[in-house]
Amino acid sequence: MGWTSLIPMAGDEVGYHAPGVQSFHYTDPGWTFFAQGSWLNTWINKSTLQALIAAILVIVFWLVASRKLKIVPTKGQFFSEYVYDFVRNGIARDILGPDYRRYTGYLVGLFSFLLINNWFGETFIFMYPTFSNIGYAYALAIMTWVIYIGAGIARHGFGKFMKKSLLPPGVPPYLWILIIPLEFLSNFITRPITLALRLFANLFAGHLVVLVFVVGGWFLMTYPSQSAATEMNLGYNIAGVISIVFSFAILALELFIGALQAYIFTVLTAQYVHSSLADDH
Amino acid sequence: MTLMELNGSINMIGYGIATLGPAIGVGWIFASVINGTARNPETRGAMMSTAFIGFAVVEALAIIGIALAFVLG
Image (tube, rainbow over all chains, first blue to last red; front, side, top):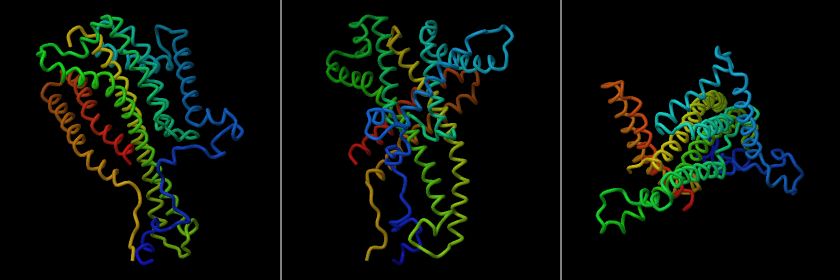
């Protein structure tokens, strides 16, 4: 043994299982709500339910918030107006310019949906960010992709939009063979992929860091009971407690990251719509 | 005698090294925004939106890196 007895988490096949990709797969019976093997069980899992709950929350919140608006706002109206103004003035109007009203609805919905889903990662009961499953991030990115390309085609017509997005002005003809594939790759493929992967990677990594501290801290805190070893070690237990306490700091950081990623996704959506609407490249 | 056995994909170490470039890039972008804001606070809004575009482009490298680290792993 030698070394391994000095390292509580190494070479211990009984107790410690390092968190990894498999921690994001909810296939245990404890995490599903329907009978094993039924189609509901394969289609509805924890993240699907979270996305549905978040969608319902967003719809209900904005429906309630937009009814009975008063000139002197109540506390609730003040809050919802603050969020709405943040997206409308801070993102939509700043980036999209004069024709921002058309896209404000999508941007507000997108921002609040992302914010709620990202903060599910730090909310008790849920404790799992929906977008750490990449499919959900892809879905939102595809929606944004359809909207910014649709906006460009609706504004300029298909041919002119393609010409505008594939050919920057002032490129000499002998470079077209190089520029056109590059611009196509950048505008139509890399953009949605990076949009989705940025959201996914940040939340996945953040949740994984939390898991490392919580699972590892829990293992160390209850040290001899979950491993093959029998002797006590107070140092491990203290390290475990510190690690659990530190995980709260990581969770606080994740709250910030979740809000930041929601903001960046919304800003980039607005930016892409703006770049397809713009007259000059 | 085996002292310690590590398993997993070495791609992740490669990805860790690969994040250095984008990290420096993102750092420079926001450092420049801070500098610019300190010199002329009124232009903060314009600089922030440009900074976020630059941030997105630079971070795309790190994102492509993590995708490749998973795909090739």
